[in-house]
Image 1 (cartoon, helix red, strand yellow):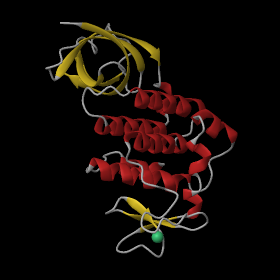
Image 2 (cartoon, rainbow, N blue to C red):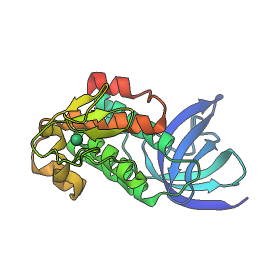
Image 3 (cartoon, rainbow, N blue to C red):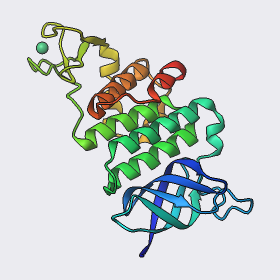
Length: 247
Ligand SMILES: [Zn+2]
């Protein structure tokens, strides 16, 4: 069985019996895989803190492509995102990132850009202790990289630019329309929220956040993008209602 060395981000873990763990891993070389870590919970745990949720690790994994569950050979930590999760909002944000990444990426599909995105977003949360803008940045780029981002600057039907006016989210079309073109149930999205996009569309995440405090409308835009992600997954996200309460 080939032993593969790769970097990975631990998405989630759960117990398996007395001493073992199953980890959902987003690896750089193999994409998303699940693997069992034997002895991870034993007293002299072989993996230390490497297999904690959101840890960025170097991983040696026994990989057999036709198998559902791989086996972790060893793992060492490159960067921990454990401490920051003592803040409940950060913990929730981390769970959201893990859930969306798991659902969005097919098994075993390598995706270097999403890997780098997730790592950059985790680092921004750690550095700034803020969750709103990092999550917004993640949602926006995940949708855009996946080709699922609707046009946020103009009406899908008449092509009119929103500029200073509000848009309306049509959940059936998964697109934005203007006040004249809307029909049926559509949720208003303020011009203020839609106007935020240019500020981060071409910026690095740290530069964007470092500059100034989060602008009004950040949360509104983030929630719109969460809805769009859910629409594409065709499934409710378990972490979304929790985020809505807390963040
Ligand atoms: Zn229109």
